[in-house]
Length: 426
Ligand SMILES: Nc1nc2c(c(=O)[nH]1)N[C@H]1C(S)=C(S)[C@@H](COP(=O)(O)O)O[C@H]1N2
Ligand SMILES: [Mo]
Image 1 (cartoon, helix red, strand yellow):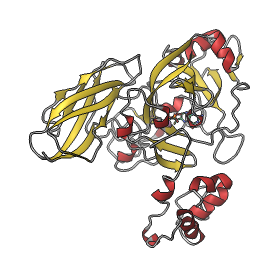
Image 2 (cartoon, helix red, strand yellow):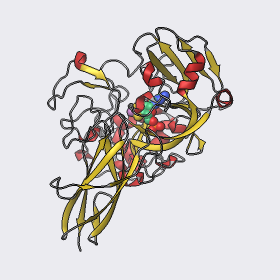
Image 3 (tube, helix red, strand yellow):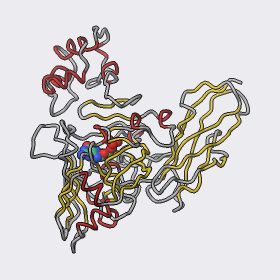
Image 4 (cartoon, protein in one colour):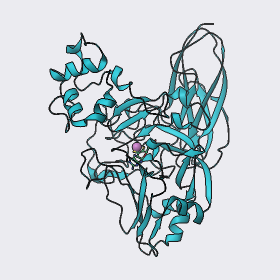
């Protein structure tokens, strides 16, 4: 049996055509029919009796989950080209996210045949000295540090938007906190000498555009110089004590915590200092932008009213129990993490009565700035029945999590209260 991945590896255009029909490469929402359906049946190893009821563009779960990426485990695949995979909340229970459980968000095709020895990073643009560094140079010239840092995709939680927002339908798991080792971005920029007039960085990576066009980059974002000079940002070459995973940017990437994950360029080859806000792919238009003021769900917000997303909002995730759990005891320990792009978390509260009353969770201090903080709480269910466990975090700026999604057109920044449903039969 040929997997969807193998099919795509062998011939992506043919695979698109077979699976999505003729409109495939531009718009995958083609109707599955004719040759497409029989190819699908072939790939699945059996016919699809109810194919007439299949919504257009649907990838059978039997195929999407058939992906195997070495070194990854338990992820839910949203797409296979580009690869996008998130981690179910209950598999994010570790204090430090194992590499196997770190989500993957690709906009293009990862580079192949990566050679660590020959890898170069160029730092240029408005700098006093252009740098052209190997990974060995980075290790020799700069202090090597290890930090636990949260990376969260700006679109994490998009699946809950109503009306829906287009883009990857992430539920809760496009977030992770791995232990990253590398050199400080600040130290490298200082060595290059930030030139007068430099206000923004521009990041480039070695991945290629889905179209195959070598002149197009899948994504190139940047941050204001003040953010770039934050000592917590890393140019990382290790993840959890081992070389980076191929899907998480091997051999070199940026980790710029606190901002949307999209600024943390993977397969990093160039940092370019500019005298204007960077205008690379996914920096312009409506990408990674949100209205500055709340808007009613479904509002068509003009471009001028959208601002580039900077600090990610305060958020928490319950990692135990798992939603849907059938519990047989009245006492339960709850576990999870909380984080914010704007500083430490100072409180996490738990409710099992739909927010009528809240109990303080025990909150650990962060291992270092921009690491997530773990919380635990012991609760008692009074009687058998259906419960929702809710968690709500507050950061040191006083910001807390809303109940409703603050809707925006592209489905970013969903930090609404996490709700886990359980049944209790004592
Ligand atoms: N070169 C490159 N860097 C990239 C991306 C990409 O597609 N190409 N995706 C970005 C986005 S949108 C996110 S959320 C993070 C995800 O990092 P991860 O895949 O290691 O979880 O990488 C960012 N860096
Ligand atoms: Mo992202």
